[in-house]
Length: 382
Image 1 (cartoon, rainbow, N blue to C red):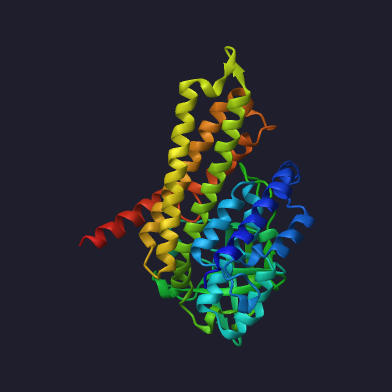
Image 2 (spheres, one colour):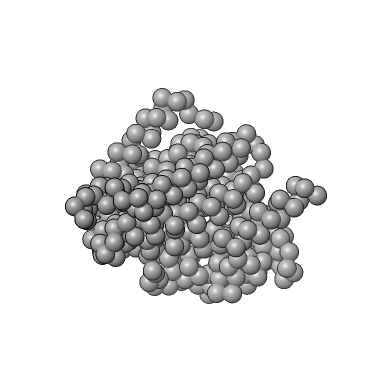
C-alpha cells in the first residue's frame, strides 16, 4: 500500500538528511576500515532502512516500488557499501520469503530482517555458476528429517556478517527450473563455513566472501515454502525488483558524481577562468545530465508499471542495462573533469569510479540484460 504524499516526503527528507549529515562525512572512515561504523548501522536500523519493502505486519515500512526507488535515489548519493548492508534485507533475502515462505518462516524471519537484527545474504553464485544459474552444483540431499548441503558459493554479499543465508541448492540432477530449491540457513549451522572477506577493486565495506557447505545439516523446515523445486522460479520473480533497485542506486550515484564534478569545475581555474566556462567541459556535463535524466525517467516509469501489476521483465532489464552503463560513463567524465585530482584518493570521484564498475556485472551482467531484452522484445512481436 502506497504511503500518503506527506508521509513519503517526510521519509525522503529524513533519508536525505541522514545521507548528507551522517553517511557522506563517514565515507573516508568506511573506505579506510572496510566496515560500516556500528553507530551508523544502529541509525540505519532506527530509520527503518532494512525493512523498506517488508510489510508493516512484520515491522517494515511496506513501500511500493516507486517509493522504494525514490528512497534509493537518496541512498545512492553516498558510498554504495552503506546501501549494500541493507540491500539483501530489502531485496531477495526478504522478498523470497514474502512470496514463497511458509507462515512460520515469515513470522520467524521477516520481523528480524525488517529491524536489521538479522542481516540477510543471498547465496547463488558458485565458482562455475554465475550468469548460468542452472549450472549450480551445490547439492541438498534429503536425509531423515532434514537435508545435507554440500558445495561452495562465491562472491556472496554480506556473508561475513550475515545471520541468514538464502541458499540456492540442487535437489534434483536434471537441468531444469524445478531442480533448484531454496534453503534458509542460519549463521552458525553445523558445516557452514565462511571464507575470508574478498579483496575487491572497489566498494570497500560491502563485504563478500566464499560460503562453504561441508555436510551442512539443516532441518526440513529450512526449505523455503516447505516445497522442493521453487527456488529458481522464486528468485526469478523477485529479480525484476532487484534490477530496478540497482538501477535506482546508479541514478543516485550519478547524481552525486555530476554534482561533485560541477562543483569542481566551478572552482578550478585554468587560463584565468573556471573550467566550467570551457565548452568541452560543458559538453561532458551536458551529456551526463541528459543520460542521468533519461535513466531516472526509465526507472520511475518501470517502477510505476510494476506497482500497477504489469509484467516488467523487459523494462527492468532495460533499466539495469542503461543505468549501470550510464553511471560508468558519468564516473569516467567526472574523473576527466577533475583532471589529475580525479586520480587521487582524496577526491570521492576516484573511489566512485572503482565502485560503480561492479554494477555492470552483478544481478545480471549487461550482456545478460541484452539477452533478456531481445528475448522479451521478440516474444512481444511474435
